[in-house]
Amino acid sequence: MSDLDYRKLWVGNAASNLSDGLVFIAMPLIATTLSKDPLAVSGLTIAYTVPRIGAVLGIGVMIDRCDRRHLLYVANLLRFLAYGALAILLIKGAVNLPLLYVIYAAVALVETTSDTAVFSVLPSIIPAKELDRANSQITGTQLVIDEFVGPPLGGFLFAVTAALPIGASSFACGVASLAFFLL
Image (cartoon, rainbow, N blue to C red; front, side, top):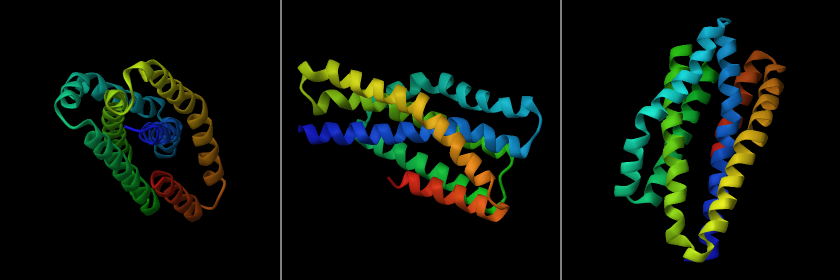
């Protein structure tokens, strides 16, 4: 395979992790607009973590037995659909906390699938002697974008949309979500 295949995989994974970082901050901020109860807001952490722990072995088996590239496409399509649905529900004012939990749990499962499948696809697109470098680049990119770029950007975007009138805020949130996931 070509270096172009690796670059596409790397950039696509970086974009996916940027969305994960944005959502990592945006979801709790959205939850605070729905409930002032800290316990209810912190329930998002449970909704995000428990499904990942419970499904990680099954996801690993699925990745071993299925076409990994296809899984990457499907996982990112499902992520797009989940965020698109959330954006539409935000625009319509139809979001509640239990629904936010469900969407966040679904995103967690899809994120686990996508992040694991990326490393499983890698040996099929680059020579074995370059695997260490490629794994390091992808891991480093995931860490920096998911932890250091996405969350502050998500907080900033939420603050900007919160400062707008209610209708414009919902619209901006929805448009930003949809536009970002069309990358």
